Length: 464
Image 1 (cartoon, one colour):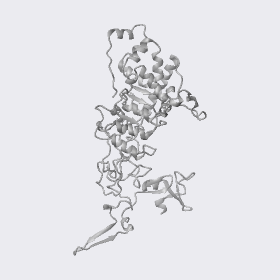
Image 2 (cartoon, rainbow, N blue to C red):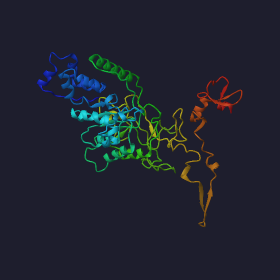
Image 3 (cartoon, rainbow, N blue to C red):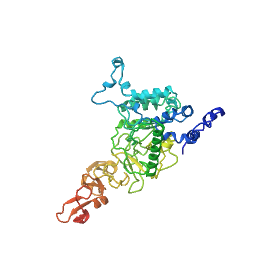
């Protein structure tokens, strides 16, 4: 639900804004509800150009709260760090300042210049959602946004940024979420850092009113097309790998330290093999490890229809369960509730890391089996023992080793690799894609074998 900020103005201020000489657009934007639901769709350049149209527009945009609440700097040219590889940064070279220029000043110079301009115009304090995807962002700049009281950023998006030291960023986050932090700190409540940045519209100049209108219409048409094509959010409606890049264990420890304070666009895996899981030790697993970030969203177990830690279900109350932030960041609100609420069809899912799905997950149909329903042959044996201990009546103890063939005799593999490109698949998926030629009896894959067909083929079961 969108949030509207009602601004109460005096009679003289309203008369200035709604005089008979003002254009029709200004009469429409004076309504706070229309203004709050319109300006987030406009780029910063359009807002600044609109403020130059007249004193009335300038007063409306610069003196109305929440106009610059959602600030997307990805399309601002002055915020970009464009250094040609051929000049190796010589365009930034200054003989007088070069000896005093730090690495942070060099890489975050464009963004700090934009922030300085916003602070000088007293607009930085109104920014609650800040999108810096793809720009040059340093860990020192992120530390200022997170811990500096002059910033009021609640949602920060730094996906696919450049020149970011992730170790220093994790240190800034853990310091902000320390146990001795001041009351109400940190102001940051949501951080987008693991996903890929959203595709944006191509840049085009907006020097006059006609180009502003064209940019407005293009932005509105793009938003309408996106909303009509929206088929559901990641994690809630899609299944499979949600985060393509590998995430180091240090980030998992950072998410654990920020749990309940700062939300991320990823969650921790709650499988029973992790010591940070609430169901740790409930299943006989010998492999124990620390926290890990979940990179897969899978449906409930194909065997029992649930999982040891319990699936994440769509609910209005997300305070009791850790849910990931959904991309893109919300436009008309800067709350974690709006950033985590699915905007389309939502189904229960189980967030898991790749190690908790190994040898028990089908890459084709996303079907998997939990620890209670299936034990990987040759790895996690019942009871975690490889031998049987027998105590005689006289107190003597005898130990007999169990042969691996005996242990694996009753444990049948749920998934197997029949095609290198297909990966690990279940039997039903293999029977649909893997065929054997009736003429030469050699096997082939219908998906990855170029020119293959079912004319001379038989299923693997029929071939056997």
